[in-house]
Image (cartoon, rainbow, N blue to C red; front, side, top):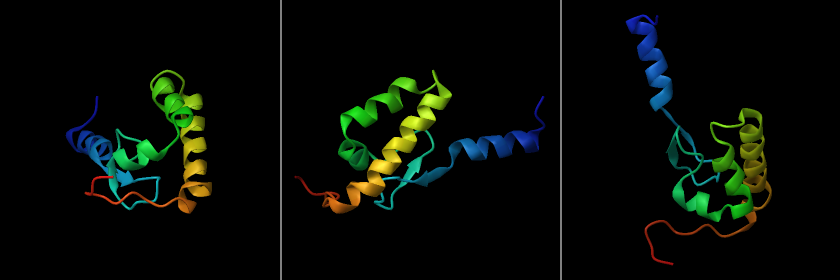
Length: 88
C-alpha cells in the first residue's frame, strides 16, 4: 500500500505537464501527446498509431510517438506555424 506522502508524489507526476513536441512552446497535459494545433499539423498516418496503440501495445505506442517527434524535428520546423487565436 502507498503511504500518503508516496501517493502524493505519484499523483503529482500524473498531473504535471510536458512541453509540446511540436515546438510551439505550449505546456501539454501528460494525458495528451501534443497541443491541439500541433496535433492537427501532424499527418493522420502518424496520429492514428499513437491513439490506436495507447494502452494496448506499449512498445508500439512508444515507437509511434518517436516517429511523430522525428517528423516534428525534420519537417515541422520548415513549415509555417499557425497563428494562435486567429482564424485561418
